Length: 148
Image 1 (cartoon, rainbow, N blue to C red):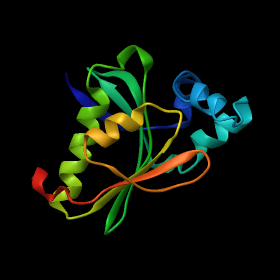
Image 2: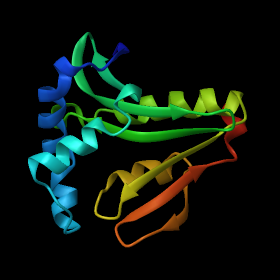
Image 3: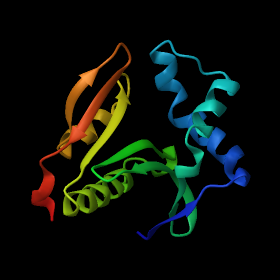
């Protein structure tokens, strides 16, 4: 399994709309949040300069949108194409992020909809819920300097 990344461009918008519709809209619908095309597009364009297409053996397999600050790494969006889910791709990507952040002694944060079972993966990797709102859990990975 060879995972590489390339910066997302405007040419990827159709792919990202399809990916987000397949991976996220069911969770938004379950949370009674908007799933229309315009709202979906706004979510794709949010901090688009930080978006990377995940390539598995040089084929698009998902999206990673990540923000790196001096003291913190924030996973803004991680979406794996349903055809590639359940194969360890998301876990591998997150583990790599955690290793890099741990080496730099950074906290890693993310949010997950309460209706999204991906929260189980995050908990299994050591993320802890630090806050929540009506729809989402806000999670952090802090003590992971043991991963190095």
